[in-house]
Length: 142
Image 1: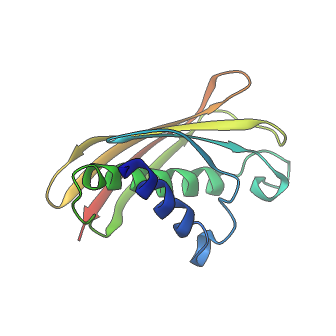
Image 2: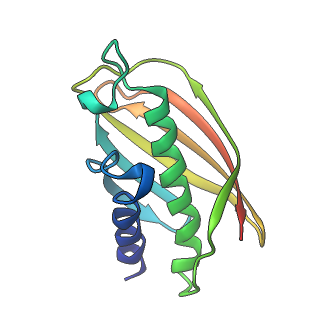
């Protein structure tokens, strides 16, 4: 099943380089072609000095999972997915999420062309269902 290949790639990518262990608690909740939904508990290592979800952690979460949304377009068709690199990544932080809560990220592709992909994402405080972060991501497909 192609969804398992995307999930396995995600798990492998969270264990290497800068992502090593940082995203270990992310659970993919739903995956369809062009859309990924995942939950992550806000633990101490994800927080800023005042014990709220760090903006860099939100950005990393969105960066990695939006890349998986692109990958799902190719996995679904049994085509080898391209390597992707960020061209632009923009985040708006609307509210904080304290340590101990869980966030839900929903990311989806708006368009995947031959060389450029456009994505959006939203992060919610799962307890309150409040929108806390929005993101926009443009990626180059190599």
